[in-house]
Image 1 (cartoon, helix red, strand yellow):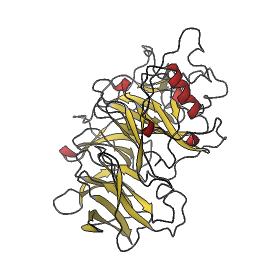
Image 2 (cartoon, rainbow, N blue to C red):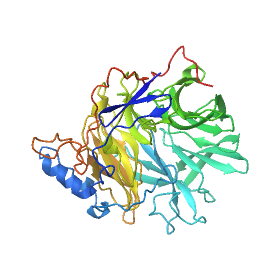
Image 3 (tube, rainbow, N blue to C red):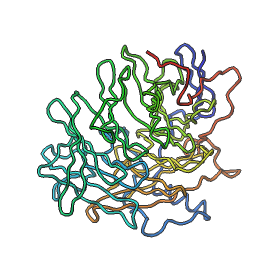
Length: 460
């Protein structure tokens, strides 16, 4: 069967594992990313009707990335250290003890191994954000994980010898209360992103041939194994707001391409295929919006790893916008604007851009024709943020001047290029098309799966 993907407005046919790349107008590759500060100024000048950002939400100009990025791609080396609940009310992270490294933004930041760590909970839904430290009698290890719950408690996973202990932390006046939940005996245990129900917490225990799915908080009696999934599973993206449909990236036990699958927790963890762009491609799901069905995907179906997008349940092929392809920089989506029912192409997507010069922000819409690159506040907890339904992005940050703050940024408007300006697709214009024309009739796409896919069996 022939699978189909859209790249740069051209259908890419993939048959029997062979990928045919479309031509490019840029002989030297993708466009150099513009200076975020200059780009933001041009956006404001081009769209005078766009409402200005309030003064208190403005980000410092000195945090903007330089105009040119050195020829070295710097990928994030650790999972995000700052985790936000699905409803955006609370967040949690490990932070360094005062006077050590609190300005670095959390664990995994190149800080000395003997740094003393402790959990910290942020409240984000009040009149102004504030942080509550949750230290215990001894510091935490740098490889511990914290996960906020909707009731304000913080789940912590600690490695103790060959097992992982789990506890709930909560403030008790001047001290910190701890409720032990139990332990899981396994080599590796990774907490999944916060469940949309705000109460449950899940984790993956990957083995050589299978992966255990554990309910580690919110169960009747401590941690319990929900299912043993075939293959090695990783990732973790929630597809609904009830906390029932979970997408995982699955690699077969015998080896082979990584494919995103859907796990229905309401039907005994039934696993069904979710993404199948090409037979031999690695197709991972990075982000999903339950309201609109917008999916952010990373796949090598076009011949190399690219960021793409699709819609859950749609028969249209995945599109790979050229404007999301930056030289010498890694681009990772971390938040999608909610509340855009039946309008996935209008959702604003926040992306973390990492390069040798540092990290900054990208904002993009599937219906738009450009990637807006914007500066971030000093001390931004990179890869974290929350969208409002109105299209305002909150970026949490902590630096030497403030230990807990959020900068608010209105999503830039997408301006269509006027006649006589630089043509769309010109390498230095930043206006590469991210949409696509209808594919040729000869191309028969394998659509995105609608989870749950009843009547289809999981690959073995």
